[in-house]
Amino acid sequence: MNITNVSENNKTEVLNTIIHSKTLLSRAEISRKLNLNKATVSRIINELIAENIVYEFKKGDSTIKGGKKPLLIDVNNKNILIGLSVRKYKYEYIFTNIRGDRLISDNYTPDQTLSFNENLKKFFKFITKKYSDFTPLAGSLVVPGIVDSNQGTILYSGEFDLTNFNISSTIKKYFHFPFFLENDANASAIAFKIFENSSLNNFIFLLLRVDTKKKILYTGAGIVLNKTLIKGDNNFAGEFILFDTSANNTIILKNNQWYLKNTFEEELLKKLSHVIFFLNTSAIIINNSDEFNFDSLIKKLNNEISRLKRIYTGFDTDIIIAKTDRIHLKGSIALLIDKITANQIPVSQKK
Image (cartoon, rainbow, N blue to C red; front, side):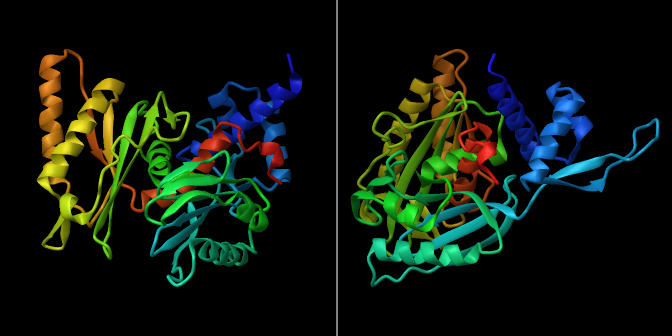
């Protein structure tokens, strides 16, 4: 048995319990939840306090037997996660604590006369000045398109007209802490898993949005199977809904809301039907959007699911509209929390 590994695993479990708990916990409550002895939990809490990751800040309620009120553990808001999102006409940023509670968020307007690379550098420089009062633990950038997260490369983005665009050196120049790249649909799927429904094991997150200036529809999907994001060998796993998305054949504006045109809606429905049946997902999640009216699509999806249920005993899939606004931006934080939970951002490195 590797004592060091056991110790680090215990530390990760304690931190994860603090991060994901809906209420503040005492040392004794953490000990009971994890079935770890109190001495081990106290040692770990003391380490986390020394690293400024957590602190004990107020007294909880006494037990029914009375006695001394316990101290409760909370995360330190000085240690932050940084989430960035870029789209053609609007960049966004959010700073949160390691539980995902928002501390700061705002928009940043890129200069349309500059290249994507020039705008990105200006945005990164702007962000470095915003977190001067904090200690960043990790950060991420979410972009529309197909990305290779491991290589820090935007493989394709129609919105920015980019192909095989590597930004790893730019990231390293401005951010001297763990930093990750992901696409918006995958990030949205992780956000749904972390912030809305952690019990859902298999689902497809469908991301639909409109470039209102160009009147172009952008589509994407994130696939989660057995609670794991599926990307495929070449990062194309969520691109089963690639279409010619010019405004002429996909969307129409009615009463200040966008609707999918019938021919496109039928094509999307056909592809979704094949995928949900093949993967046997328990839900299709559609992004929350004030600009879109999904009523017709949802009705047709429900009809198709009912048809499949009549043919195949036991088949079922729910349709869920995500509650989280700007879920792609929350996704930039969710993927960091997901990596912390999986010990891919080791606790021992966060000082």
